[in-house]
Image 1 (cartoon, rainbow, N blue to C red):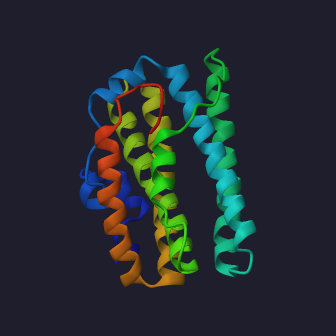
Image 2: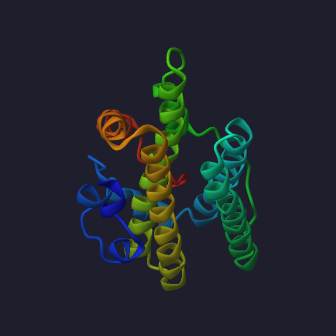
Length: 212
């Protein structure tokens, strides 16, 4: 099911985030305008998001080293995410801007709070994969907003490329979850994640200094 939902060609032309990614609440339109006047801050936050994505993939590889497919699939993602960090850092430098301080990621922390901590090992494993899928899905949606709403034409194209990449990563984590835990179990838990994430987004302040 999920493997048929999304590929890079679909993401390139997607018009409905709800239909493609399943997200139940779109980003507030004001966010793009605020981000457009906070370029240094949004690029800084983006850089650290890419860095954390790389280190999280490394942690998953270390924790689940016995799962051969997971290791094989995530190893190149580590390289890609770190490359993205370098790309965003280079963009800051090119614009004469500085990499600011890393902030506390309220959005990600609230997703982590939804993970099942006790009980069945496979349930905990599933939630770790779905956390990553959710972050990638929301990032794809945010990058799509930037690619369409920023006034800076270069940054619009810049974020178009990132949008396509995040779509692929979303697809990858859903696919890994289905491989190890089965489509039906993933589908049921993903529906719970989508509902929860919409609640998180609805309660967060609209700020232009962060990706999430």
